[in-house]
Amino acid sequence: MIPIRVSNVLRSFATEAEVSALVEGLPGSKNGDRLWFRFPLELGDQLGAGGEPFLAALLPTAMALGLPLNVEAPVDEEFLSGCQQIMSLYASWDRRLHRIEIRAPVASVDKPGSCGTACFFTGGVDSFYSLIKNLDRELGENRVTHLIFIRGYANCPLENEQLFNGLLKNLKRVAVATGLQLVAISTNLKSFLRAPAAGWDWYAGSLLVAPALCLAPMFRRVIIPSGDTYSTLSAWGSHPLVDPLWSTASLQFVHDGCEASRSRKLEHYVTRSELALQHLRVCDHESRGLHNCGTCEKCLRTLIGLRALRIQPPPGVFAQSIDLARVARLDGGNRVVGYYLRDNLELARRCRQSELEPFLLHALRADPWRWIWRHSLVASQEIDRCLLNGRIRRWALSEAAHNGEQSTVRLAPIRWILSQCLRKVRLKTTPPVQNSGKRD
Image 1 (tube, rainbow, N blue to C red):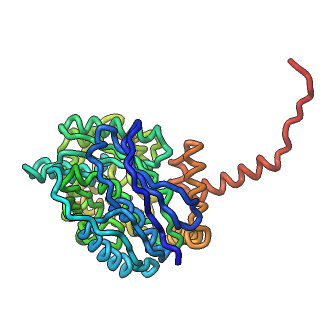
Image 2: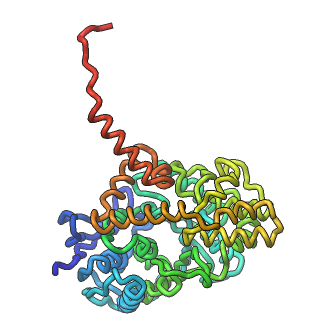
Image 3: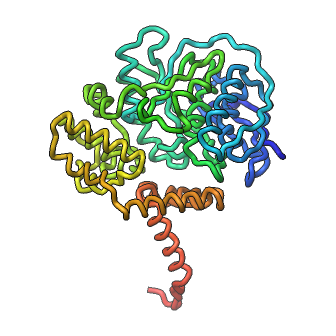
């Protein structure tokens, strides 16, 4: 069995500071592919050169493929122990993930580095909650000093520069207003993810911690905002049992926010902060990062909560106001969507906003057509993962980015893919226009 091999870990400094490594042994990849993490140039002397970022990045892939993982750079002993426990958790949650052999030299124990504390921050409800709560309650070493944003994560694809620039402007305003430093990181990690059988959800944690591990000399503590509560926890790549296990002897990861539902986060923190309301970004579908679209499920769940709390969002934050007819058409049978609908229903009743109840109840009612559509979509995704190694998904995202249609492909992926196929067929079957040779 040929292992996945990580070697030649390098730090380089040009227009950006970069930590990279050669990755070999991934099916379908060329020898010589380099996995990289890029940081602002001024942070160059704060970057580590250990193997931890690459082990974290590739562990779910190796487990999905059942391949050993060899990392030639030294790895912290506490981190190695944590990876063994992470594998046990993942394998118990999903039988398509397999425990694998990890080979890596053990690094000497590092002394704790800086006293800095960072918080992953996108401008959404969960990250604003963790940030505001920390600034309200913490003093000394546990108080947040930096915000981390990753270009190449789910909410900001690497190839969409316009979206990144729009989001970055918004995040910089928050950093300036709070007196914190913003660290914007770029990575090509998603191009190395191979999950032919296991779902992409298992990368939720490793995609975050991998670039943060490069900054181990800079931070003592990194906060990962939670999207779940203790009562609704499910098997997921970022989890209160998993995230702390990525820690090293000098860097601690903290999963934060499980004590509060999304409606409680909105009610007690986000809506009481003018800064949060002005710079709230919950939308994955607006391709320029200038505002929230107001029509996708993430926007609607937030707008429902704001309406229940009788809060009018500032002008320009949402492209349009809430459409209750769209709320009624949401698929409450979906586990995640149903959770947020029930949470908002409880909030509406608590705030005595009876006008919202019929629309929320309609979305939560059992609907056979929505059930058929939901499971057909899941089945098509599984066929693409298991039989085609995600080729259709990668092609769709690449085409959508090229055409500036990311929002369309995410809102209606099947419809968009069919329309693209039909368009290509028409282009092939339409005869070219003959040039008559005449000039005007």
